[in-house]
Length: 473
Image (tube, rainbow, N blue to C red; front, side, top):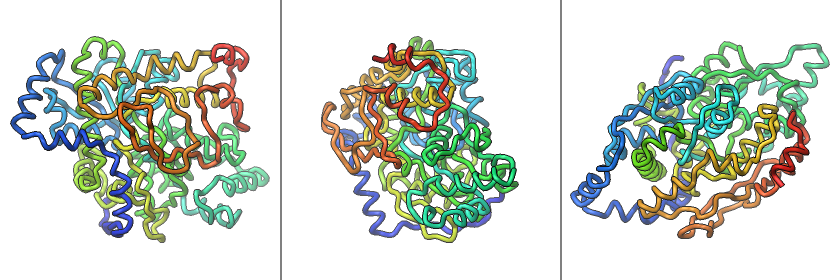
């Protein structure tokens, strides 16, 4: 892919104000810490690093904009602040991330939110107890199709294609027409079988009656290779994180149909994952890492720092994409096609607001329901117990308590009921939260996990539902 010159997108002042207003939730405690004299802070940090079991650490990332918390913590000195000497390793695929963390070649990594669950349960690999005590971000993905498929969808149902968020209704009509004509299924790509992208693409398709295991062909392609595969017509569309949707749009080879923010507002995306044995062997080091990441996330979420975040992560050693492309979504806009002006989407990337860094057990349980829905899991499990083994809010709270920031006191929350801003009161101090609705109007209640799983009209579940229900009564 050539890095041809691209025009910088500037957010209009009214939209920029909206973005700043959305980001106002960054805690006062973090701001107060910045008021402490540098010398005092340095002494406190040095004193806090004495009990570290390990100080030289290597963390893996995939070249996506949501690697930002790790990269910012490394480049802006947040890791050093807590006595950690870090190296950031750009990996070629999510399988590389999984395997290197598993064997200890990496101390921890940027992971898909479903990856610690899959690693622990042995979905797609040898079981390895893996945990997360830090959520890296909310949102950040999109679904993009080729210009040719987009035109076919518009022709099939122009009314449906004018609505936002864009549904898969027109795609279903194209698929049905191809079936009638005897054509083979179209090929779409996602980044990993247990990725949010896989579940989002499936959720979006299934909401229109498409069975993603029967009506289309789904393949795995690493994020940076998506655009090239779309351009060479190996695939007709994909779900991926940024900047690889906006890259296709800027190059004029694809149309971004819908963002994951539109599918499920403020959905969990990536986490920081480590082996359980690593966390138990190096508990103080692990806590120091979490502290650094929390502070890096808070810093990266401030609108006044977003341009610098763009500059940092665009570098060849990280995302390796033109700053103009990374800047688009990172500074609060989204472009559906290169023929349209950028649209405001202030919450496309959320790194700290809305309790974004907290590892909700309800989020882990949601991923497990999707693994059941699509036949990746077939053994009945106590979902709540399993979630609590892998997502570790207890470890997060230890770090947050020492930082003096507000944190949730609940481990579970429902999704789909809040259409606008709301306040989380089950916390050490009230936390401003964002909307959490699904585009199809569904609601997710973690107290009724099996009922939720049974509610999907399109499902390829193979688990014994009666046994599953008994374990999750």
